[in-house]
Length: 103
Image (cartoon, rainbow, N blue to C red; front, side, top):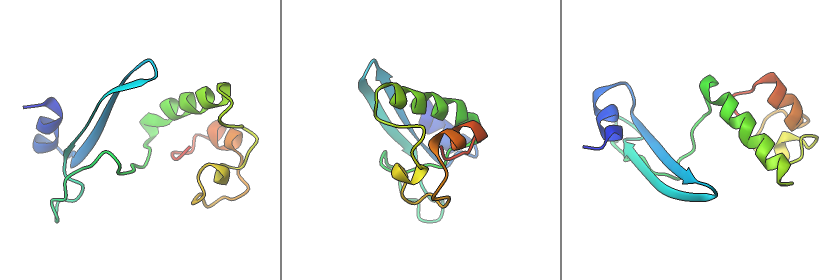
């Protein structure tokens, strides 16, 4: 049994999605467990997750990589990239420095 399936069955994790990259290539993706305990709907790779505190360094690194590639501007409002973001005038740099869980 895949370790991810074991985690989902034996702990508080409902489900998870895993992606492994090598360079710029995604070499593996997989989803395990369920999205909802009541409906038993299986987890799928396209489901979005809220970012937790532990993931903030990863998100900050990803933001800076996008900036280096010219795909993101720290002075742009967050809503440029996340239209549903509630603080319409908040800039990427401010959100990154304040450690928001969603940016």
